[in-house]
Length: 123
Ligand SMILES: N[C@@H](CCC(=O)N[C@@H](CS)C(=O)NCC(=O)O)C(=O)O
Image 1 (cartoon, helix red, strand yellow):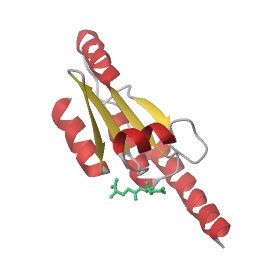
Image 2 (cartoon, protein in one colour; image 1 turned 180 degrees about the vertical axis):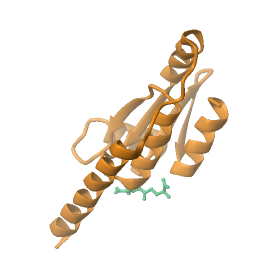
Image 3 (cartoon, rainbow, N blue to C red; image 1 turned 90 degrees about the horizontal axis):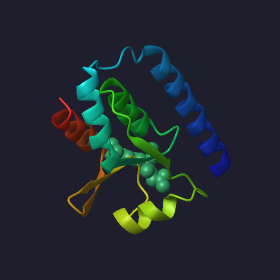
């Protein structure tokens, strides 16, 4: 039964991924200097995620629109990054944005908070 639920969940997730791909539109355009600076800044950010999770798709969509090349790590079962997320953030819940700033690390959960943070930081 659990297997069937997981299968349906993943199938729905993949359909949402496809719809997102078709409808996501264009990325934010910056001058090459501005983009270079943004590319440097996002090196301090990492998104922990599942491929087919709707909250992760929503977050990835915002990241795409904002044209932010943020590193993405899969936290799905059996992946090497799942433990990192558990140890660092305290729980395996995705999406989670790891923010490194002045030697300190913050783990931000909640897709809406992550999107708000990125839209504010990279307007
Ligand atoms: N309100 C959260 C919901 C996130 C959520 O429920 N994520 C699910 C995946 S879709 C999760 O990580 N569940 C824990 C698990 O499956 O181990 C958000 O908007 O980010």
